[in-house]
Amino acid sequence: MTDARYQRHPDVRMTELEGEGVVLHLGERRYFSLNESGVTMVRALEAPQSLADLVGLLQQEYEVSADQADQAAQAFVEQCLASAVVVELGK
Image (cartoon, rainbow, N blue to C red; front, side):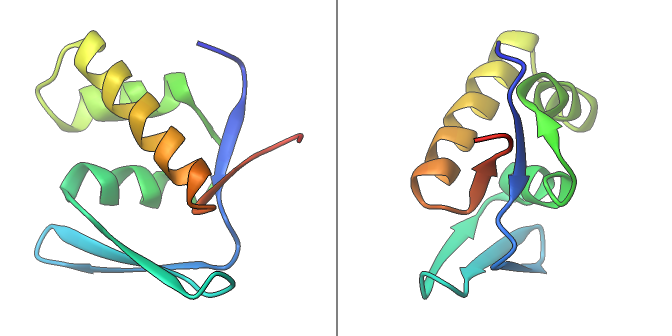
């Protein structure tokens, strides 16, 4: 894992409903649906987080192995970066 830190884009808004969420990117005028673990990570990304932070969060919140949490966090961050939902800090 890298030492990179990530944070939710300032133009992103999230609404939660019954364990799921919808993210609206105001600048891009796009929206995305999230499952429960996605909501957990987007909520955490209000403040800067590393991949290791997100992996730890997933392990704490859900009964998953370190490998499962690592794969989920990496895939989630990559998708969010590609959609501009999350930004990498320091770039």
